[in-house]
Length: 113
Image (tube, rainbow, N blue to C red; front, side, top):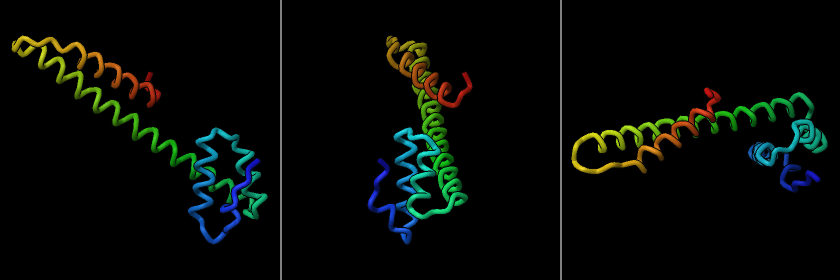
């Protein structure tokens, strides 16, 4: 079930980290990931630390993506409003709506809403 030929290579910690991250991304339960690591010869404390580090990495990536959505959403929203009210004859509903959607997506992913 958790067969990973490269995981047996204990000299390559990057391979173990990749296994943990790919398992977390596949939404495998934490206890299954730890069990697979223990099965491959990693002690339980180290396995817990590896899974914790993997979860922290994923959370950091999600926060970074959410912050990017907030920034770009705000830029599109402000630019759309500025162009619409500048008096040059364009009404940029698309930019305003896109900015709002991206802004709210970023805010919802940071658990503000």
